[in-house]
Length: 227
Image (tube, rainbow, N blue to C red; front, side, top):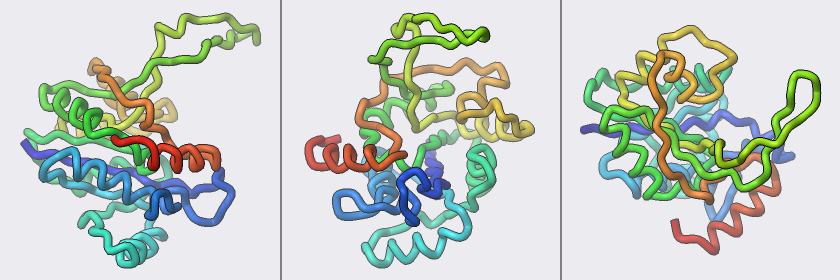
């Protein structure tokens, strides 16, 4: 069974406070995105990766690969106006492989563990639509329509990560739907078709780098954890 990964890296890095998109910022001696790609190459044998980047970033990325002597994925798709359209563009580059499995991963989640990746792909190989999750550790309050709020049991909630992983034929079918603002991730697109979502254990280090504080934490993780 063939395995594919769409790594979506369309961020402009505005919340990082600089001109360089966050997926290209260095941690541990090389750009974030290179760490992310390597995580999948190490976890899965013969995985085929499609990198989704805004068109104006393609040459910059290839220049980084030359500078760091890094082997870029051969397939680079054009980023869209939304994540939905970016994923759809990435899917268009994949073959019609009815038996394949595909994962969609955020380019700025460089610390996904090999175990998390393998759990997701193994479950998807059984025909499931899979998301990795971690428990909620903070107290949760729900804001009601009248502006008041109530405490909810955190045991009833999970934080969703990526790679969100599916049979390729299923995800391709789901992305034939018209775009909706309700599509917040790939699971929500698939769920609209009536497919049940299966949760598997993620890893707590699998954070999405969004703010300068996240980047500082990333430096700590890379020097203190073995994923």
